[in-house]
Every structure is written in structure tokens, then in C-alpha cells.
Length: 230
Image (cartoon, rainbow, N blue to C red; front, side, top):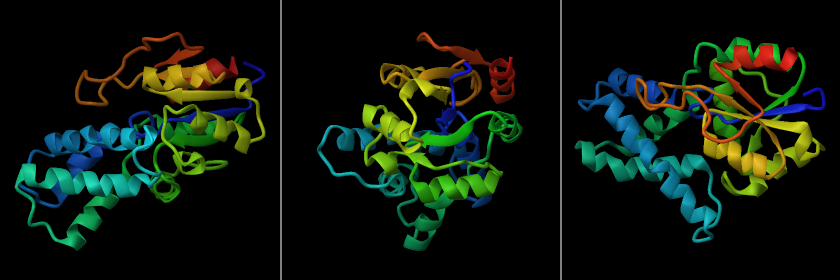
């Protein structure tokens, strides 16, 4: 792996616990709903909303916009349709302050000694910047959907990230907890590393190992740092 110059990271699920963070916010706000069920329902609207853009049925809009539209869509299911505009706007910003998994801050610190680091996320730049400040992530750039004006797993997203660093795809590695993301990156020529997040969707409901060929499979980011420094 001595030819790898940059590491690109999926963020939602790989670096941050979106489900637990949203459930905690729901409880903090005193909403009389199941926080985990609310988080799951909101997240379940994520891929369908992006797919319309990927398929060409809608022009690119930032993920913040999609998250807000998805929030409005699910509120009636939980009896929260009376939530005010200000309350909806405030709740939508929970995505900007999702909490990192315990290994992430130190893992990124170790990896940054050797590689350029950037998120390769469907999240927009403002969202990624706020999340970085919330958790103490230090990026060399913020790449991903807003740079490419499209959403993963479209090839343009991965290739735009490589081009931003003036690097060939084979000099870049995609790091993710989702095999589908890694398969798409590999098809573009990037190296790949899988991070196990067995509890992403609830206890025992995440990927413990990749189901596609990868260059590295690690327990967490600290384990990946050990792999790549060996």
C-alpha cells in the first residue's frame, strides 16, 4: 500500500453513529416517540430521495434539503405533524452534529500522519464541516456529493475526489462500513478498506465483514491504521 496517498471516508455509519445520535436527540427534545424507530424511518427515506437525482429525474440538491423533505414526510407517521417550522429546521440540523464512534477521532489522527484525508460522503459541505467541528475531525479537504453534484455510488463522485487531489484512482483508498460503497469505488479503480460497524442499524444489525473483495478489512479505524503502517 506504499503507493496510497489519500484516504476517502464514508461518514454516515462508518465514522458516526447516526442512529444513536438521532435517537438521543429525540429523547433530549422530549418527543413522545420511539427514538430508534424515528431514526430508522428518517434514514429509510435517504436512498429513495437520492435515487431520483441519480436517475436524472431531479437536478442535484444538497443532502440538507433531502433530509428536510424526508423529515416532513415522516412526521405524520409519528403524530408530529404539528411541529413548527422553527422546530423542524432545528431538528434537521441534528445531522450536522452526529456523534463519532469511539475509535474515530484517534484513528483519523493516526492515519493523518501518513495520508491525505477527506470525507467522501453524500453529505453536503456545510454538513460535513459542522460535523467535523462537533467531533474534532481534521480533514485536508471536504469532497463527495457537493463537489461532484451527484450522489454515491455514481462513479463521478469517487473520480471527482481523486481529481481534486490530482491523484490517480489507484493512489486513493475508499474506507467504508458498506460493501456496496466499496464495490462502486473499486469499479472506479480505487483501493478499498472495510470497517466493521456491527451495530450501525441497531445491535447486531450492521456489517461485521465485507461481502465483496477488499484490500483491507479492519475492526475499526485504529486497526486500519495498524494495517496501513505495517
